[in-house]
Length: 252
Image (cartoon, rainbow, N blue to C red; front, side, top):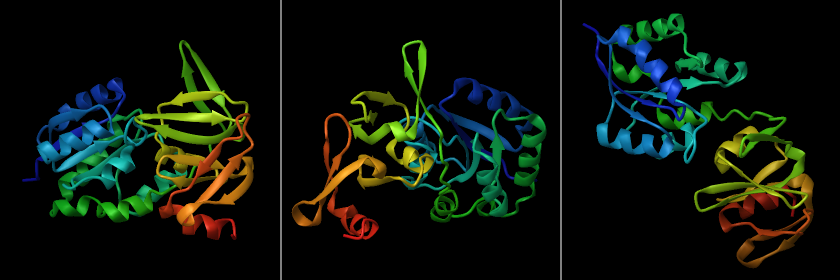
């Protein structure tokens, strides 16, 4: 008899969660849904509380994205991604035997996933260790635009319009060259993964667009101060943790 996987579904899209729950009811002999989570922070708590065998995990979510959530786990369930990632990332899943479901999830594709689960004699074979998984999924996507919701409108912001990105408490802002600041639902880490290589992290809460640097000054304790070309001529300091990498990057 195949193992019955105690399962948590983690996705910030309610319709996506409901669809997956409805489809999984056809496989109740294999999958037992014991919980749902609406974002990475909620997912982290549910996993540690419920200790599931398996999670269906979205990648782009508020608070913590899927990768950030996985990196914080103490209990390590098997992972099946429900993702809208492009074909290059999907190829990485396939090559490393990491299962995924492309949203919107289709019954035919889900059936293949269930058959794979049923054939596994040792549950730990369903996925790579979390550390390896995170390395394999470090796929950079060169986004042409980022969407920002302003009331009923959706604004498209081009990467070249952004001077820097900064997190303040639980909020993340796109700080543009023209001085405007736009609140985004993305985390700093997820933006680091999506944006071109011109964007680099200088501390835990800040990404800068290297094309928008006016000058670099040496700060205290090995830190660097970046003077930006934005309207405010913002001065942003690196942390000691990133200092060596930044000095090497800029050949300082």
